[in-house]
Length: 188
Image 1: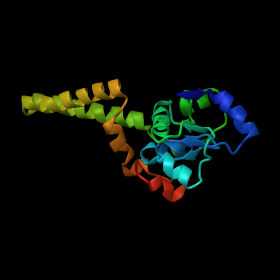
Image 2: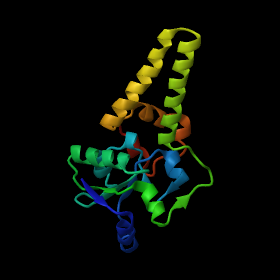
Image 3: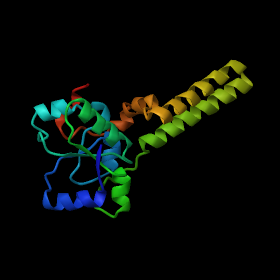
Image 4: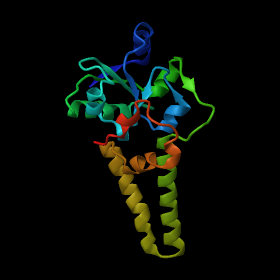
């Protein structure tokens, strides 16, 4: 997988502002803060083939991929490769590294809880609920805590989080539409 440092990409964007840069975070995360040239295509709606077929991405040229920290952009690059497009380049460290490098961003006044923090809040709440129910109601409720713990271990090992995918679909994580319009509705 190819990567690029934020400062290096910024230099490219300064000379070629039309370079394809996709931010694969949720619409709410994107609306909160994003690289000005980035277009939002949430990972769960990403279809490289549809974007290329619609002429919204140039064939045979690099497509720069960005998320919060790099994990979702890596998944997007893997999806590009699976669909036969090997030009996905991940921005190292994602939007966080971009901001830490002091590069320009567009910010919305509204603050949002990141998807990663939402997962931690929900997982922690479920574990605590399972423990409390097991203590006060019936010991069998400890299974809830064990299930969530096993899910977190699975997510850590496989870098795939079902809870995160579910949370991304909730209404508060769907604030704005995709910059590409109807092409983002194509599911893979």
